[in-house]
Length: 369
Image 1 (cartoon, helix red, strand yellow):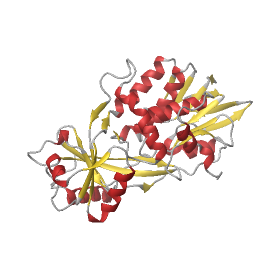
Image 2: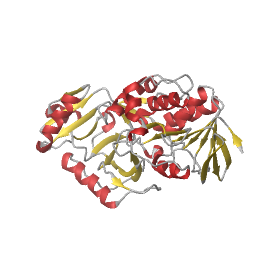
Image 3: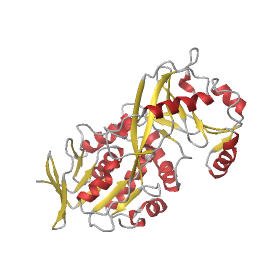
Image 4: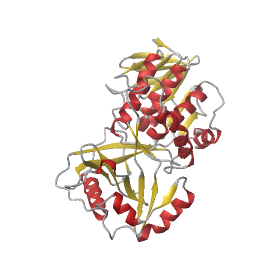
């Protein structure tokens, strides 16, 4: 039996960031990962941007509060910069004009831009697609691999332990201590942090804790060549106001396309669906002069949402010492620093610095199932 102060289940970005923060605070932490490598599922398949005007209110607060770490990580956290400037363009065909106007009115740092100016930024934009557009100039790419491994490096440097191939098969509470059985051994601690992503409800059921009703959703992406004669390296990310597709420049003159799908799925090693790949190409080609001769790479990941699509960070109301850190949806990377700080503050019994986010993320808001 490996005794420690805190067990964190799930070594994706949520679990890794939370475990690192707790270890830096002086707690003995063991991070349990079911797979042979951390970040195998959603984190390892994410191509993330920091976009302030994305997600519900709690996500926007956590996104804004996370910016400082992305731009100025601690010494030794990463070998190179975590960010690269990448504006985001929202395009509106006629039937999306009202939605775009609402986004501008309610957004922060989001301003209208003439469609003619958009065509100068993205010369393959079809002239008959958009009637209006808006730009968030202050967005940036996030190096997900560097961020994730920065947290794992920070965890180890602070004395924490990562155990892989350690899927929880039994969880029970005895005499004020959680005991977690895994193929890698048995672990015990007064506090368990459930950062298991799509498997969050399954972990809760193992522990006898009421599930939240988490909904894993498939998101599909593919990589194609940019049109001949075009180098998209400095193009913005662009998509429509209704978020039915987007295109993001990638390395070596490639474009990543997605139909922004959200298909309900059970927790699994999710794979792309051929129909979604076709939808991504069709929707992008409606907006862009983009011949697609081949798909270089295709993949899918799971984005897991709570019933109200806000995050769930806080103590389970029906189980002592069981802390939820789930429901990141499509916002897990851009909110990771602040969300992990919030989870660590709660676990350590400290008053949350982001009071409003803590209130909105409290798992007690959901009825017991």
